Image 1 (cartoon, one colour):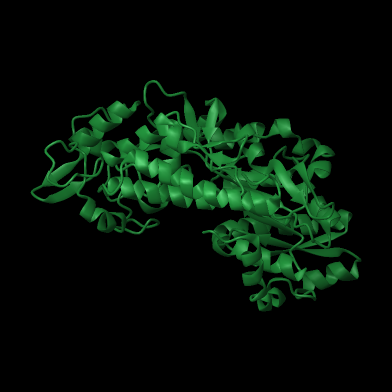
Image 2 (cartoon, one colour):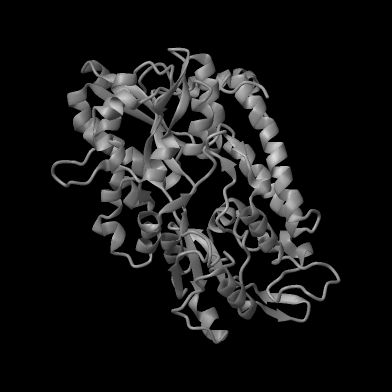
Length: 478
């Protein structure tokens, strides 16, 4: 969690043997050989997707290779890398001087590596293409790719655009309408405030003796969302100007941690909330039922309400088509500013030491520009097929995304809310998220108070951020 760039590079150098696999030096397929014989440049594209999502990306790349790629003199070789491996493999490739010519990557990883000089600023490219103008993109997605990074060629810090937003996400409240009916709740009227969410959670929690048969709601299920709750309570985790955590002094952040703590029973207490669960059973609860299966606790009726993303429109149809469910904005405290949760985006980027940058951008220009015959871009088609949300307003508003009454709720969260809570736009985003989750665990296990937990997030995160900034020579040591 506290690895520096030097440590990353050292680890990367130990993995150089994978480069021959990830970037073969000679064309392997007949199509590539034919492209080389035509005088076209073969570029390598690393995809952080795999499975059916990579298959769709590969299909679109094949379209490029057989149409615009001929005119551009470019042929794209697409390789599925997967999200869990792409950061390590990119560092390995950059250290060896054999990176891909372009890659898809999560926005958090983009910022972390762009501040280490691993990516090329795309500002000049983006300024020259109408489809890549800033005003087309949802503001929170543009903020994830536009920041001060290190230009390794110029050996200088520059404000630039380091990636092109491809897909984004939004989270909403999902509820089981049959569970609402059994509890005497209106199945068409979800909770709208935190107070109502508590009331509904209490009525939807069903116990038989010492066993909990149905859970009403758990704020950190199916995974930790402490960052989100802090933002939706009206809090600010860090100062965007200084780049340091400030959560210990933010009363809304502390309140959000305290609220999550009410969902965990305090041993031998007579004042536990009616929706609180036995903390000794959290681990078994979190493991009951595989996420992508009919045994998912929400699909199986074991959890009545959850916070989830837009992909559930497809997942529920696939794994639980019988489920009668609804989707609505996430409840917030009544006095909190209206906010949505769209934590990250996936983007395309060009490594700083890529050998064919101009050719890579020719491909990216095609991928993001509307086709003249359909008025939809390949990027929009990609989002539609994998059921994600496009990063441009005009594409997100396309009928194919808005006609589904459930999917459109997710899209509208990003289009209508004045503020979007995102992952930290800092050079150590995963560190921050890890510390936030760790603090929440202390609170729900009653090992630390919310105030102590928030202070520990701030202290531990700022210690590492300070080291990082000094290494980057961005800030003077305090």
